[in-house]
Image (tube, rainbow, N blue to C red; front, top):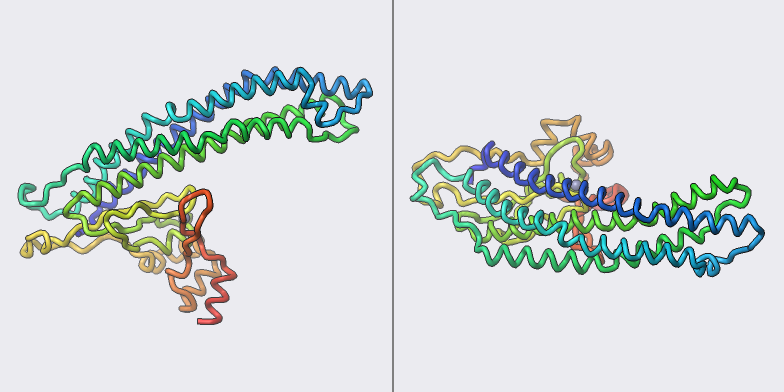
Length: 352
Ligand SMILES: [Zn+2]
């Protein structure tokens, strides 16, 4: 169970590996969407020119008339094809990353647990078998199904947004060039809204496949007894992650339930060396730093992370570290821990 420097380093390497895949998918998707917009941008520029010319000629175009223009219909049809292509390629684009994240998570998670073992002949230790391949395949398959399902509304929603952006009025006194630029900027923004959604799907699904593989590997490891929520303690860590840091979960729990864009991980906690059958090998102390110790040793960073009010309430004993996080249900996503609002903490502090 001794959590050593090596354990902490391997745990953060594991997380960095996952982040690298998220970043790479962000770059690939962003480039792909920029290219797709380039392919329809001229069409929109021409459509906007037609609309503005007809308005300049004194035609009071209603939103329905703008939408029904042959030119608009053509641009919308072309854009719909592009958006459907983009949505359909999300799965294929992410598949290799998901597979590699799942496989490498299984390997690296094993390494995190192995780093806690006593320095004895490894034949005497429980075997660190990798989780069954079929279990990993199931995680990959479930992730890919999730990507397909969540990318389904992507194209129709982005198309709707582009359509609405086109009929939104531009101030009437504007020079046609300025109006044209503004309208094109709006269509581009609406189109790119689809990218924002695609990026969110990519991040969520890659992270969730990592979390599932991590839990599956820890559950399969006979030496692991629990998982510990691990945040990276710094002046930029949020109060919620600071509050959850160090909390223990069952070895098969999928988590941690951190907020969107959270960077926390579960570190496996293994049996003590005595429990593993080596009562005579002296076990070094755990190097896992608790939030309490971190706050004591890094008051400046702690004030920056918590804000002066939370920090003071904590120092005065009006609130506990655990009070700073609360679990919130999300209709479209998994439940997650979020920072308890300061107002709620103040109320709790007044009525202990
Ligand atoms: Zn956080």
